[in-house]
Image (cartoon, rainbow over all chains, first blue to last red):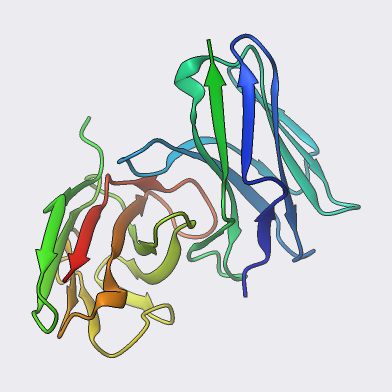
Length: 113
Length: 114
């Protein structure tokens, strides 16, 4: 079964707020995690990734935090914009060979102006 | 440069018909993946190619599903005798490397089986 999941199915924020999207994983052997953004009618779009030898990685307006002790991953979006409205998925390799990804069910982020 | 493209974008089939979905990965990408995404769910793995070799097809739900990538570039996912439960978005992704790394997704093909 899936080992990746998200805590909340929906998150509503105001424009300019910071958003935090959470993800829990169960496979302690996973060594790579990715966050994807999926807008309606489009395929998932890569946001940021992190390997298990790191606990934090920053991109443009986004930060991913990895807590291996409690097997928790989060995506922080700074100064959320209406264009950030989408479904966000965390994902991890399906197996040791890393041939494919397991996706969680996703969190729908709604940003209001 | 061009990203991953898929065709058709939408396909309506009558139950029992065969369908073929095409994926054009990013040029030079070694790895190619097919995923199935049901409404409101995350993508689920179907099959994986490394160049022309199908290395993992454990996610294919039945023997009605068949995928190929004969020349290591374009891939086709074929579904025979479609059923209503096959209705979903079929996503193709490609990657420049093997192993766990960033995958680039196409827009998907939305299949509706009546």
